[in-house]
Length: 137
Image (cartoon, rainbow, N blue to C red; front, side, top):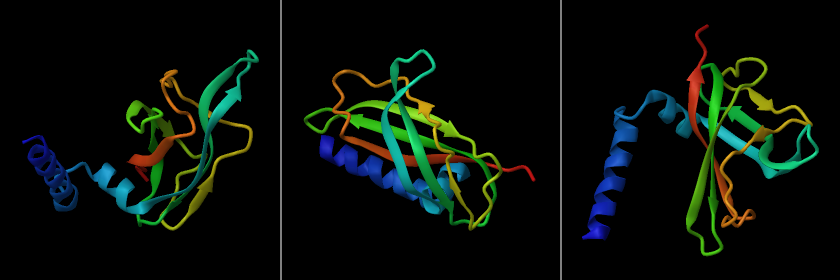
């Protein structure tokens, strides 16, 4: 029964994404934003303590719309491969990212991650672009 319910939910999600029922910002991110590189690591903050963050982001907008920002979803897993924490980070490039353009994050900058539990195997994580914010121009 549990397997059947999972199949029904997954099928509904796929149908919603491709029929336009899901948010257009999520559809655009899934279909058009290519994440080429990203680094998840501990970084030293201004108080000389270490905190988890994401940096070295390189994305390409393969679509035809200009975006102001995009949301990264970082999922951490435990040693057994089970998800234990999600972090969502909105990234705003210094200029809107036009269709066909690539953006690389400036050096020596990172976005803080708030939810990284001790149970996380910090070498086992997944990063994806979850959503975009379209430019009003």
